[in-house]
Length: 286
Ligand code: G1P
Image (cartoon, rainbow, N blue to C red; front, side, top):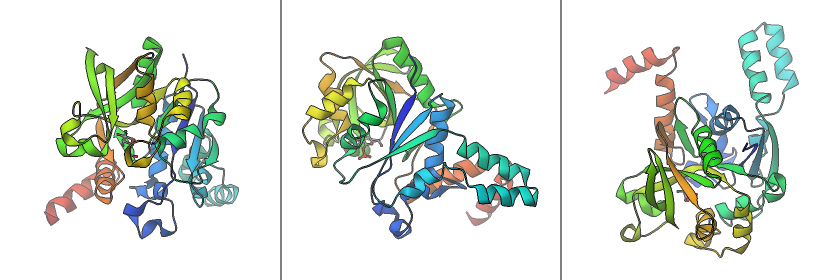
């Protein structure tokens, strides 16, 4: 079974990144030199996804514009003879086909996914939460698409988190079935610490069957008074199995300035051009 489309919700005020987000969308703040959105779309395209649906709020046009051609810039780079930069620019605009759906009111992640229904149609789809960056050799979503093909059911990414984090995440009750793979027995959005069924928290990668859209139509507002994607997947569990994938690799939460800084440093340390100087500087200032 192939998964051709992905929904990437990018709406929201980005309040934790004020004042920068007064005038630029949160997803355009760079991790080292690429905006955060670049990483999610790159992971999607490396996994063979052909079309990305951005769910945005007003004023976030820069996010999808990032993936457009910029003829003036291309001409300028050509005149300068900067082939390398030109190639990089063309790679970005050739990455993927995009479309945009506007979420007028912040009614929750589940609502954001639901309003992309028409753009996705009646086929399996992926969801990426671009605040969750997973740095690994092969795209996490590729492994999840493989599991989806094997089991024919929805798959969510999970990660073991410290106890104090469970109440800000979706958490699953797992039944282990294979290395890194569990069947989900129950799942709950933002549980109180004492009610969390485990410390396996959902991280923003999903491969879902289209009947999740039907469940989203029916589900009532849950945690934070919002329509929750977790609740829709949970609603289907009695009839449709769902699986969790404990991904390898390093996870960064780009939703906070510190998480974004850590991701930037991590990416910089992998970069041939700057890692040595960065290492020297860090050891000097520590
Ligand atoms: C969302 C999901 C939650 C998941 C989290 C991952 O929560 O609702 O289940 O664990 O993303 O980052 P949010 O961070 O939008 O509150």
